[in-house]
Amino acid sequence: MTLNTRVCELFDIDMPVVQTGMGWVAGARLASATSEAGGLGVLAAATMTLGELMAQVAEVRSRTSKPFGVNLRADAADLDDRIAFLIEQQVKVVSFAGVPSKKGMKRLKDAGILTMPKVGARRHAEKMLSWGADVIIAQGGEGGGHTGSVPTTCLLPAVVDAVGAQIPVLGAGGFSDGRGLVAALAFGADGIAMGTRFLLTQESTVPDSVKQVYLKTPSVGTVRTTAIDGHPQRVIRTGFIDRLEKAGFFGRLVAALRHALALKSVTKTSLPALLQEGAAMRSAQGLTWPQVMMAANAPMYTKATMVDGQVEAGILPTGTVVGRIGELPSVAELLAQIVSEAEETLGRLGGT
Image 1 (cartoon, rainbow, N blue to C red):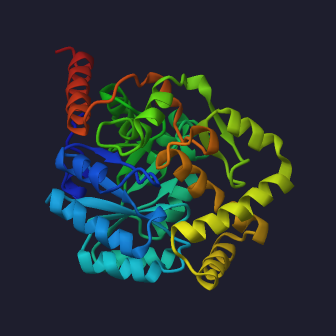
Image 2: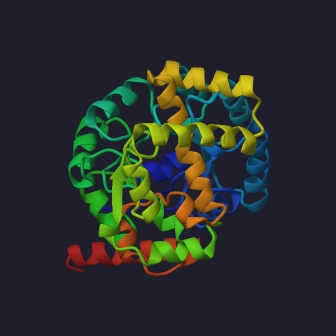
Image 3: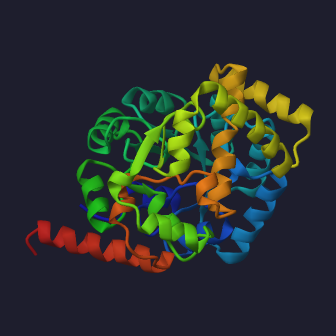
């Protein structure tokens, strides 16, 4: 067993650790710090305009010469333009928020860009393999944000069994340290992807007051709820979440409409463009128009906390691993600690 896995060779990174594309969190500062320290940083472009994405890619390149990735929304109305830009820039890796676009994946692959979709079931991994995915992230129900229900300890070996012989698999959901990395390797994975652990670092731009809420939250202080946008999402349980769950469908729909208009303002999107994007989401995901409006909730609720610091006006996406995190290291310190602990664990298991 070694820390130099297939994913290290494929991504040209020093350690098999990926920082996931967390909306409003994974900007140039965090992504570049992760890549510079030897992991793979990923920009969260799903909550950026195309212009912001262009500026953020340039900023990452000004901070590090190491490879990095970009996370896209496959239902974005300007997806073709975003893909064209990433191809032009020859970004190393593209991951996806939600179900990826088969056409988009092929276009990226044909241009030599690696694709890395996230799955929550074995059958989804098999489908992504058939679409040409280069790496699979298998995220268990312990993961933060939108997540499935199968525990990582069950999902990860199942996905490895299904596709691990052909392409690398990364484990996600419940990982925060070197012992977790070794556990993922023992399951047959080629590394780990982490969100919450990177959110709680010095380079994360999340307001300090919000980070303190995370640090005080036990693992049992999270909840997997559909009240935010109709899809299961793991967040910290707050009074706001309790009220949202009690609001009922009509109350959530009113909030969804309000947040759809707020999203229009934040992203400087015209009403026709907003409707076009909604129609694309409706077609790609088979959603009703009420569900499309609710889908605007998650990014705006997340922005309220991750950017504006309004804990009681938004959501705090998190994995259950939050209860094991008690400090805010730099990204470089975190990755060095993970490698050191992983090597120590491997040595102990090997009897040396």
